[in-house]
Length: 228
Image 1: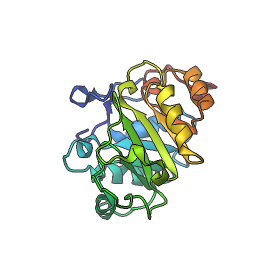
Image 2: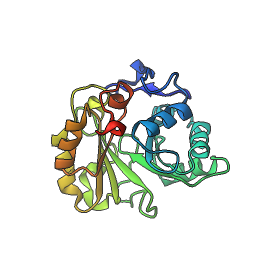
Image 3: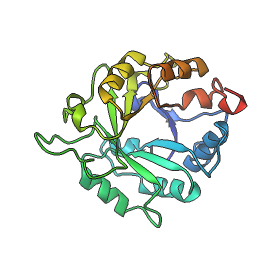
Image 4: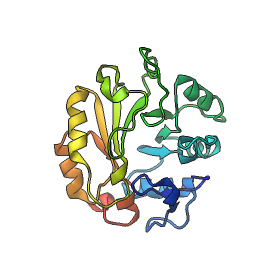
């Protein structure tokens, strides 16, 4: 948000504050990204990072320079970017404004910000890189109705339970498992609520191919590089 890494808590974006992390001093995106990669025992030669451009998601200009800086600093890392994409034109426009290195990232279409397109093809239809985030906060955030059309979902999904993000309340495995069943053979990742390695084990048992984690790494509750 505003070019800095912030601590997301329960989707209450007006209350987000700059990150305070045991892994790194400050809130510079490249420094924080490198610290997260070190914490999970990888390096710039591999791994996946998820980035939510909260400015763009809330209707402001996308932070192209932040994404470009991350792509240039971390050439071996795959960056998943949710920049409030409403349709395929928004993704193409975003890609066109990235300097030097337009590859190495995948667009995340958040159900919260998708445009209505009654009866039309989904915006990810011709983009094998595309990811759909099924956003949930007290219920589906879904103006386009994509939650109700699993036959149109892309090959990679995120089940994003915003009310659990940064809450320390544990993952919402019921919501995740329900969508996992509907997803068939697609890759399905969860987001929100992970506290420790036991939560990760429970997520795997629920069928998760992975889970987005931040708070538990920043505050030291989860230390995978040390054997977790």
